[in-house]
Structures are given as C-alpha cells and as structure tokens.
Length: 112
Length: 113
Image 1 (cartoon, rainbow over the protein chains, first blue to last red):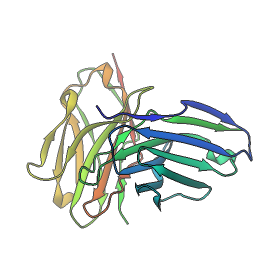
Image 2 (tube, rainbow over the protein chains, first blue to last red):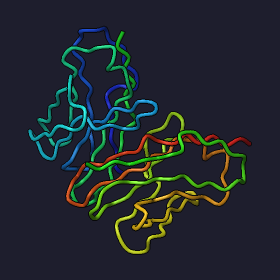
Image 3 (cartoon, chains in turn purple, yellow):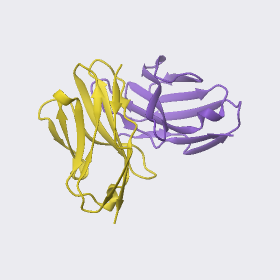
Image 4 (cartoon, rainbow over the protein chains, first blue to last red):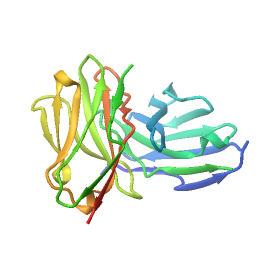
C-alpha cells in the first residue's frame, strides 16, 4: 500500500511566523505535489516536484516555497504566514506513468 | 487552460435513492479522468479512473462513471446510495501530456438514513 504521511494533522501559527509542512512518501514516487483545499474551491495546486531539487509552480504559488532534498520528502514553506493561508494542505505523490495521485491525510493550518 | 466543473455543490438524498453527480471538463486533447472521494475525517482516495477503452468504468463501493467524449463529461453514478456514502466527491482531469491534475470544486453528498 502506498503511504503518504504529513508531519501534523493540526497546526496553529501566528501571523508572520515561518511555517514548515512536511510530507513523506514510501513508494519511491518521482512526483510529489502540494495542494490547498478550501470549501467551495476544491483543491488547488501550489507546487509540484518531478525530481529531487526540481520544482514547478502550480496555480497559486504566491506566498509559498518548497524544498525537495530527498526523493521521499517534499516540504512546503510559508515564509511569513498570513491569515489568508489558513486552510487544509494536502500532499500527494505518483509516478509519471500512473497519473493517479496518492494523498496524505492533510494538515489543517490555522494562522491567527 | 484546463478546467473542471461540478455543477452540484450540495446533494441530499435518502438511502436507496439513485445518485448522479455531474462533471464537465474543458480540454480538447486526450485526457485521463478521475473521481476521488473524501469521507469525513479521512484522506482523499481514488473512487475510479478512466484512461482509455470502455467508457463505462466501475469503481469501488458500487460506483460507476461514464465518459462521454462528445459532451466532455464524466458523470458519477450509483444506483442505490447508503448512509456510508456521505462524503465529498471530486472530479479531476489531466491532459496526457501533463502531470498536473485539475480538480473540480467538489460535491458534498449527505445521505440520510
């Protein structure tokens, strides 16, 4: 079974803090993705990575950065958290040939 | 740019009723199509997928979906819903040449016992 884990289920941070969200997958997948999920907006892609140290912007990258130093780990960084970044953050992974993405449980981030 | 429309944002059904959730996409080329489900408190999981072949695909838990290329649609169906089908359902599309999935805005289904 593919397993995608995220470092926290719930996180509360203050405005202006630097926030790290970690994601680890155990299936040797090349691709990893970060989404945010908001009611009525569905899932929107923030960034994805198709290889170690490679990244590509998604649809809403502003205010976020990412890091992929190892194949199994993909980090999402909020350089200076703002209240409009309060959301559910989902990590996913897949292989280029399968297209199907496997999701982690999500991190519900609240920025106060 | 690709986009996905799910026209039903909230659906309320009684147990044993039939379900059909609409999904339309905009992209002229070859696509892969997915339905994902998110049960309360659980992570997003794949319900079914279509890559090629028979346009009627069957997924888990009695769900099926039909790809109608001429209508750019991939509607999800279930003949008889159960209370345990209460969840949020997402349609997603990706163009064969891209790795990114584009999701619809989701449909919240509530099944009353």
